[in-house]
Amino acid sequence: MCAIIPINFVMNYSQVLNGLETLSVRGMDFGLERTRALLDGLGAPDKKLKIIHIAGSNGKGSVAEYLTQILLCADKTVGTFTSPAVFDYFEQFRINGQNIKKSLFAEAFGKTLTVAESAGSATRFEVETAGALYAFALAGCEYAVVECGLGGLYDATNAISNKEIAVITSVSLEHTAILGDSIECICRHKAGIIKNCPAVVSALQTDKTLTYMRGKGAQIADKPLEIIKSNVNGQTFIYGGKQFETQMAGIAQPYNAAAAIEAAHILKISDNAIYSGVKAAKLNGRIEVLRANGNTYILDGAHNPASFVPLADFLLGFGGADVAVFGSLADKDINGNLLALKPHVKKVYAVTPDSPRALPAERLLEVCAKHGVPAELFESVSTALESAHGTVVVCGTFTILKEAESFIKNN
Image 1 (tube, rainbow, N blue to C red):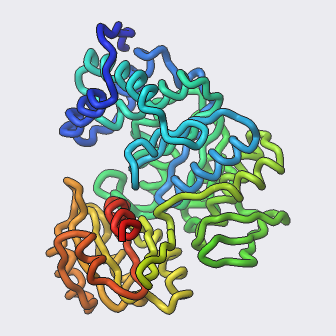
Image 2 (image 1 turned 180 degrees about the vertical axis):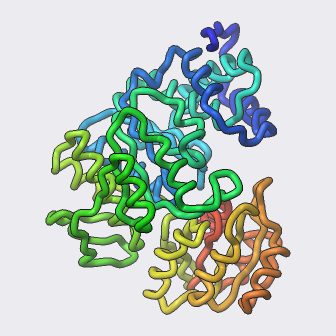
């Protein structure tokens, strides 16, 4: 266990960012011990918070947003830790729905880096996890909504104590080299966050997943659900006999909202706050529609076959897309993703994401050729968008959405 290390000087936020960047070279290293040591070295901030822990393959960020807004509508103070960043690094650390202030970021993460230095082997994500919880405690938050990074069982976030509830979103095969190559293996990792707390599981699952989660004592958010209105501006749906509205598009969103609704009921949040929170929730990069220069752009972070299902369904309303600007990370099911998208696009513009885990666009071209999908190679998202016209979907990874949004809004 780390002791609390006094700081001889106060880091500014640029120094903290540089310190975090130096940890990036350590990559991923799963386990709970280092994060627990960091938290204890910071005075165990997690034990001062009521923590809502979220795992799953798809929909974690959306459920985190629904629960954040529900808690805010119930007049609670709440910190929200999600990953990865889509448009702004600081969006991963929000307090009462707003990105963390740089002064608090420097204070909390500067202290966390100092504690980490004595531990000697913490990864960047472990420091970010501990730093986020420390910042939330410093800010006087009552609740913390915490999204798993990868898996759940051995994810750094699972070192936390004082969980009020665990929420598990849609589960599908992903990261099989790490989590295992069967749905039961994936479920084992996701369900690993259920520790001395109640659990709610989205009903948008395979039968095997539902059976597994029921065996862990989880409550399934499976009351009758009906979507009664859906368009680019959001949806109206009935869940459990009550009507709700959401600004978020896509057939998965009512199921994400339902999981958040059930979790809020367990937390004894009022019906009025639940309704208002679901209606207030909004996330960029999840079937986000932008219009500019006579074109319609659809930005979505779909990155595995299951997450392409809502996107494909949404594209049907447009009669498909003229172009898909597509990038991928190398550890994704690129064949499954492309086959899910193929019926709904005329052409793929292949790009290489700005990530050390990127799949080279040349490899994407080979996969497109294998499946008979017309494709062209572009050196960047911006150059691809310069050539794309009509209905344009940008997808394959959250990593390319920031450049896409910047291009669209600046042009």
